[in-house]
Image (cartoon, rainbow, N blue to C red):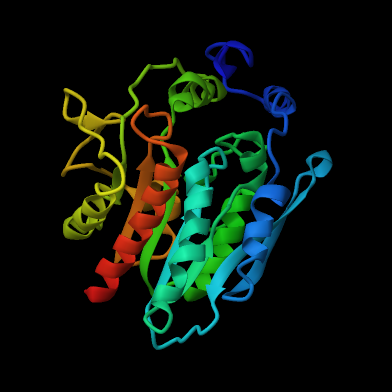
Length: 304
């Protein structure tokens, strides 16, 4: 049963009572403190670990927010931001960012500065949810004065460095639950009818419509194609309802939509989308695809 069938009154946006009922229904299913923080802590010998905020969610607990930063940070070098877990349920975004940090970050020492925020939304990670506990989507709330604590904390971390970033890659997934749970919930929350869509089978990228950098996007697609399959367009030439502008690439207007990918003003930006529910992909492949996308993005950006 979807959220849309169990919360609120059809045609009416949720109020505080409906949001509270939604939050109360979200049980903890895994642990940020057991799964993610030990992996971050294990990287202290190679990277600086910085706490950039803390989320206080009352009875649900307090969540410290951590980022990994190049130990040899050099302001003369370009910077790259890697973000994962903006949507906490998108597991390979978190694990892919950590895998990149563990296996590949050292390869870029002395070539560029790395800032990696592997789990932007820990409450949602624990509950395998898209939204934060206030029924806000962090990936629609990246702007000054954001009401989403996850978005506001990352915004505050990044803004002092704005203008120094060459690259920002934001790691996401598209899952079957987008169609069965999260999109119906969005329609119910906003008092709108649910309109069924489709889920793309494979990896794809979402570029910034105002700064698409098509050669850069294709370099990432070509690298990931060696790891897992790239999503084909639907018969109408779209992926998740957006026009396919190149093999495996769609575009969104990052900044007006409040997307994470728009926070740096970097020359090269992209948002990855892995499909973990595909019968053609394993969880390991999904993590590998995310790490490969970061490496390919960095290699292209630094070579340029």
